Image 1 (cartoon, rainbow, N blue to C red):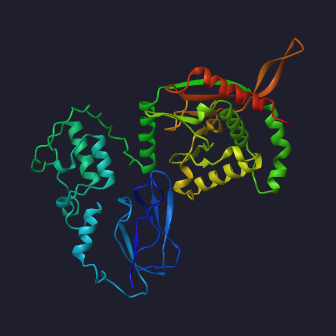
Image 2: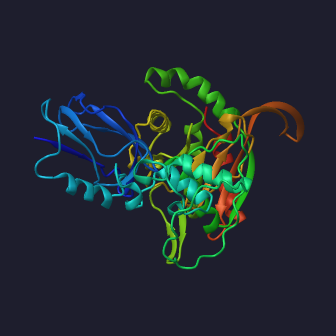
Image 3: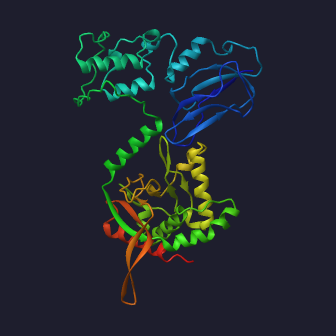
Length: 414
């Protein structure tokens, strides 16, 4: 009996997914729970396993296509040799279902108005209506080449501009758009990934929503450096790599408890003060930044925090995070210093009230005072910044928070 593979619900807030790569092709055998395809969402990348063993009969959605949750992706046969569509769903029904979910059709792409995600994004970037461009693809579909050729011709003012299709019905008036900049001949247009687009939208939303203010403190991390050096081997024996990040998570917990409004968020109904302390720790990936969350960080000791941070970072880098791993954060830490950055002004992870940035640790000459005597010493130092939402926090609150972080780390027990 055929088995239908549909786009799964990858988290409560996820409504669609993009087919990243098919790991099996029609006619190939697949084992039960073997990875069938890779799906990309605005949160994470994940693999979709086969629910049963069988032979992949049909791929209904190609790579690069974005579809809603519940959309048919593929059909598995429980034994080899079967072909064609299931009797319970004739081709016409399958095509209608595909059109309803925004899937491409093989022979009527222009009539259905389908354009690929790449073409749609390029059209939006260049303020173009793809329906006004004659397509050379199957069924008159507008391809990436068609659109780029049109853009190039328009930029050059060439007489050989591609033929326009018949005018569409009048649309509602829209504000005039800023003319797009001409694209150099030697430039390359790279499609925007779902993750990159989600990051862009989230960052713009944050800057438009919250007035950002950043404060910066300088910390002496000598005590935690000594503690780390003395405990790395012990942690390693338990299978845990001890980095500096768990120490800063501990310090953030202490500071959030001292200044609870930093663990809140601003709403029109009032200021929300979160009882739980769920700290997001940003992880840099090749295609963007993702923020998995250490839940109930205040209930974990240093070993527990190190284990949680390592696990989330490893799963983020190997594309094994679940969508829920990035939800319910109440505060965020970004360690931009791993790339050598001294200090930064991070953008708040909405709807949170603040984000803490950790700069690179460097040995610097500093003045130390003991018993009224000043002396110059070489110490491991770093800058720590806190960007706040000025709607609910003021500079004084940011200073109290960073003072608590500084006090915690500079007096860390040996």
